[in-house]
Length: 79
Image (cartoon, rainbow, N blue to C red; front, side, top):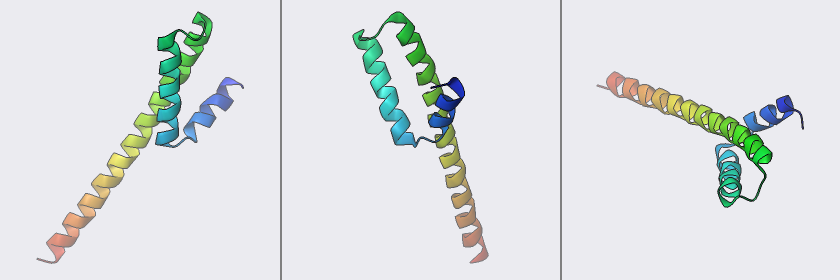
């Protein structure tokens, strides 16, 4: 799989999918199941997965803020 394909694949993952894969990568590296070269490749993918998780969490945070602001505005209108 080419790097661009791998990155676009990651950007389509849900938070749960990314965390599950990241957990698997960490386990493999910690247990020494893979070579140094593979460890480096997996580390790079892991960093991309972390970035995806952060992006999803930031989007969720913005959505929560928007909902809170709308609720607050609604409450102020009703006063």
